[in-house]
Amino acid sequence: MRLYRYRFHSRWLLPAEPRRVYAVLARPEEYPRWWPQVRAARTAPDGRSGSARIRSVLPYDLRVTIRELPGPSEAPGEDGVGVLRAAVDGDIRGELGWRLSPWGAGTLAEFDQRVEVVTPLLRLLSLPGRPLLRLNHRLMMRAGQRALRALLTRADDGARGRGEAV
Image (cartoon, rainbow, N blue to C red; front, top):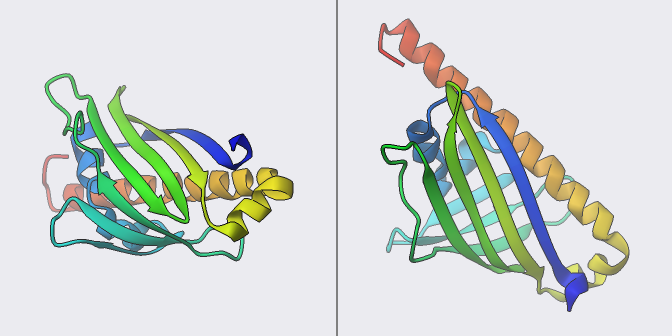
């Protein structure tokens, strides 16, 4: 049913080249270190799937499993464009992905997520609470962008302090 489907799109401008951004985003098990709303994440032994517990502003822990999708996931090449794609299942079901491209001296990271809520509680909340669920997602993504920008900036500052090329 359409009421249970969501599409989210975010655009982040980040102060690092696409290869560095890809290296961070390709390691979801590290997200809890820098993204406050990703409360827990682990990678399965196969290295291509894992699970996460996510909580933004609303008092609900979203539990998901994530599996890398076959196909065009690839690190940035000569053109600087990189793609990450995954299927998500659990409290929500669908697909998500990042597309990274050069943007000036940094990276434009575009996030796209198409999901359907599947748990009874989220379905119940989707009817009257759709604007709240969308706001909850927007706040999570805003916090993620700020945190990733800070992480990339700290890494640059540390490299400069050690006299390394950034």
